[in-house]
Image (cartoon, rainbow, N blue to C red; front, side, top):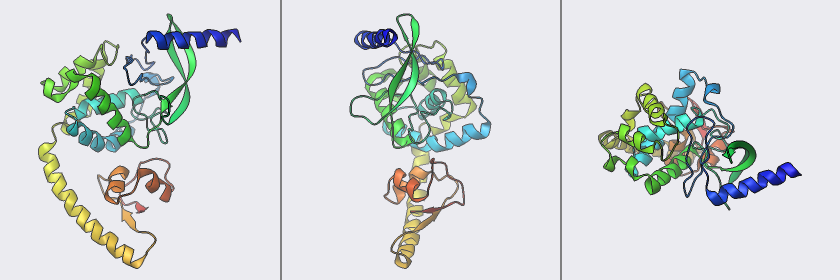
Length: 277
């Protein structure tokens, strides 16, 4: 059809010219050599979330973001705020299981993908297209991929090159995102949710690691006892602060396996819940 031919021609022109893709959430993310991230058919106004929903999403991504940021000279507060803003606090279909794509990253040849209807700004008008978006196995993998992007192309957002997270968000504005209010939006999220508590975690991590190692030894003993009684399965009771990803790491299994064994459709767990390992 004529319309299809026109759209296909514009798609080819967009790829050749590397034109900017604007997010409908208002963040206006800029194309980079490795990701042209934007949220498909999303509008910030539709995400009127409760404090409980926002905090639940934060609980799931805070620890992985802190670990990844600390290992990559980045601000965990900035990464978490970006994830909140660009996924609508984890409410976008792209960010939910089984996609776990927090930053609207496009998929390239050979990468796991899900096709979603999106709108892209080409030749001074919006064009609706069906685009492939990257599928991740977990939030951790999505956050790690985002950290790789920041490390490769946004040196001005590193902790070692800035004096504060405000300098990092200011640097990203106009580079990572075209939205002139991008830094302001990130800063407001960081302040509202006290996200700076996840920055510079060296001292906290040392204490946590000691407690974590002690917990591991205790859990290993419990697991060993369970294994001696049953050769097929062991159980774990969720404690305050646990994430499904943490539990999978402790027991040397994958997040997908843990979710499959327990018939889970998301990685949300509650204190006191029994999990089959």
